[in-house]
Image (cartoon, rainbow, N blue to C red; front, side, top):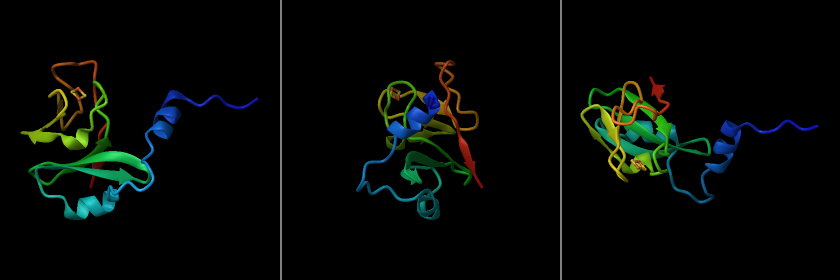
Amino acid sequence: MSAKPSSSTLAIALDLIEPGCNRPSLDRAIATAEPGSVTAARAGLHPVALVVLRDGSAFAVDDLCPHDGGLLSDGYLEGDALVCARHGWAFDACTGRCPAHPRFRLQLLPIS
Ligand code: FES
């Protein structure tokens, strides 16, 4: 009997970057990103958005808005909120929470 893949395994498998995608590696994006920026990158083959706050602190997040699948790397910073460009939902950059829609939250991967 084979193990049934979990939903998180399937989500990761379905989100793999297309061959030929020109996203930089996360390390390369970190080396060039400016404070106050949101950049498309990849962690291995997984698409992420690299967010560098104005104070220089940074985090990566799955490049997929939990609302309706917009690319968070197309978004922008408004204060310490990451705003999805597709419908304008704002996510707190410290907690990942969406104050206007509390059921939705980003998982932030802090970068030191
Ligand atoms: S897809 Fe991001 S706010 Fe709707």
